[in-house]
Image (tube, rainbow, N blue to C red):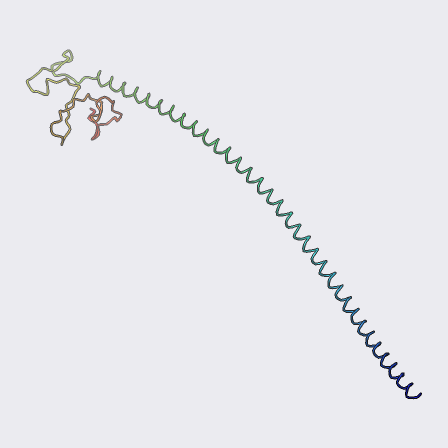
Length: 190
């Protein structure tokens, strides 16, 4: 029985060693499982933190987008108000300018009428004394014309009749009173 016992002991020792190896392997797997669970917990914590950050960023972005939309609508409203104000001011300015231009035209007309009246009333000293109204006609063709009118012609245009212009009016348009006080190249006043 010695051989049987020896075999049994060897089998028992082999079984014990296998059990020991299985225990070590089980322990190693348990440790590895614990490490995997720990890594999974850490990854889950990190993932939840990242999800929370992403949700917070998304919420901040949506709030900022709403704020920007409000600002844009306020700016559009302000822009339309400013355009309306600008058009109102332009309308007021144009009406004020029209009134001012009309007033200045009236003043200019009054000044020109007064100047024409003064020119009409002013008489050059006549030869022969103060009681004589017109100078004697001497046979010179210019002296037969009225003293307040001068004859002008348009140079360089053949066949155009000369224009008779009253003193104090512009030769460009005999109907418009002259606005310049001293005679210029374009005005035959005085």
